[in-house]
Length: 610
Image 1: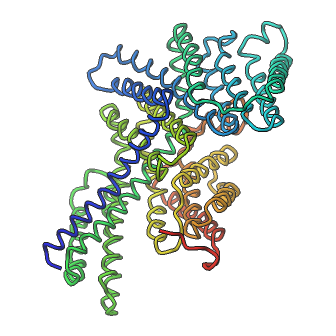
Image 2 (image 1 turned 120 degrees about the vertical axis):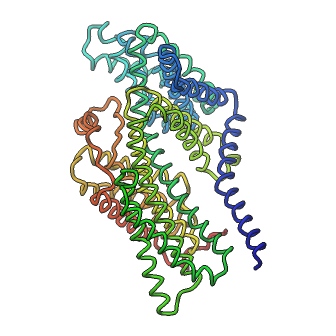
Image 3 (image 1 turned 90 degrees about the vertical axis):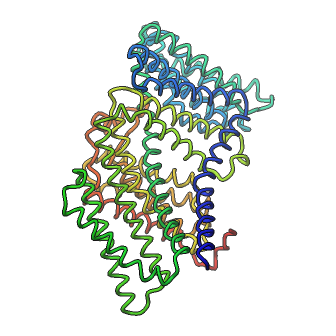
């Protein structure tokens, strides 16, 4: 191959890489936003409102803005984002098939709304948003084909509404009763009224709940209650809105970790691709003869740098250089062994170069993430706008990558993703723009945790799977498994926060997740099962290393409450030998369980079409 021909091949490869890994994800995000925009006016309102309120909050971080005007604008944007997130989450849950999603989400929505509306506690005003949720739940239950099932769902909802509203509404105090009789009265009246309505309308057509109806009503009632409460006590309402969004921000924590892991895996893939493209340009003889001297020269340069003045005064920088020198020594020893045995080939040199480059990227990524923790302590305000922009773009890009084609998905699934996007972006904006918080420093630690816990399993799986006739583990399943491990670790920590060995108690959750994945996607094979188990294990250790527990609404669990009170002191220092041993054991155990559970005779599985 001539030199000109080699250059054209490299240029074509670079264009293919840029299109597949840089342009294609952006086009998928645009397709997601376009699909949301075409659904209707309510969806467009949710999207536009999230963008406008996020921009308004971000502008308060621009240096030179008047302090008083910035504070008022920021507080108003935070209140608006609370109302919007609350309303879109309710509408997205109600638009799903059946009332199950709404039943899971409603306790948190009620809990957050009651606390933010605290200035109206003791009056009927505080229960207006709760009554709207109850009405939407009634419509969702009524959409079920079975009247018996609809009645059971409604009775459950009525009992919960009575339990929640009897005290804050002022009914108990007005009647002079104890709390339990008042709760029984409200729950009983609502149950009877709902059952009578279901019986009377049993012969009518049962349509599903509309997203637009739920959203407009939620914006009206929640906005009116929050706005009137802010007019009575601005500071109290704003403070509680920010606290409740911070409590709901656990999803942002998980996505920060996921973005860090994806970035690390992408860097590893880019290093491998770069080495392969370089090998296509260089002749085979030059590659084999020139690789050992180049690697040795780089290692000598790193050694000279370590012998000179301390580089940047960073301990992590020193560790990164020393670690890369060790990787170079191992690589040269392996190549020397192959040369002495006369077995060194183009493929061996290419593989060694790839993993040498991967070691450099991983070590430098850890150093950069560790240095970012220090940088955020010193210059958090100066980096706030850039950090917020990176977080929002990363979140939207991650949601865009979850599905292969947004145009082929049902409207309810797109609305569900819209609810996730608005909630995640809104929580991130409020957390990043609230002054005096610890989010700037914690954000870098989350990225570092995700880089350590996700990059290696993703890289190994992406290299192993193409060699087997296995289908890929879907993007949503990856996110769910990592999040399930994180949540299971929080439950374990509520019982035993001190001992990491108690993370073994998360194994039943791992088994359930793997069984569900195998029933849904049996074609992922043993490699996919091992990858899924490793993801769960990485999430569990991430939860133990950096817990961010949400509040349990209207449920008092002593162990969980104690963990909430002391969660700021539960974080462990990363990048220690104990951390390395813990994450390695989690990968081995989770991956081993997944491999054994998904392993099947090769002949019993049909090859997956490519």
